[in-house]
Image (cartoon, rainbow, N blue to C red; front, top):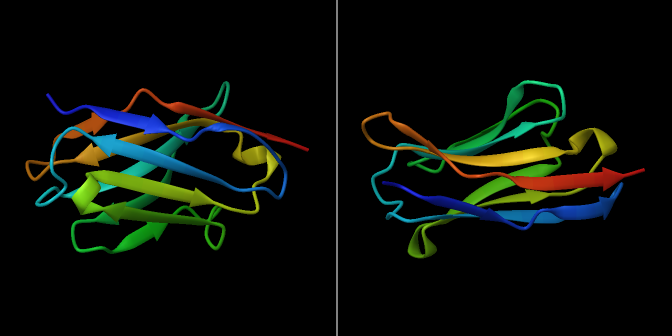
Length: 116
């Protein structure tokens, strides 16, 4: 069973930065992709960013230019660097991993709160 553990969430003022981490219990070599979704209170879970096995990245329009996804295969960890944070970025952020068989795994989520 694959386990994903997120960390790095917290409270930050608007305009500030946070870096989320997602540590996987398996090697990242050979997996299909890793990424982040977020869910604000009363809303659906929305796509934020993805990084593929080849290193290609894609972002939601709402975070382009402010968020950067990366991965460190040696540490089995993916990161989401978030800058110029806005109150509307407030949500629970979930890490996910897509293995080579296209099966997905999710972390427990980490709260990000941006105050105005």
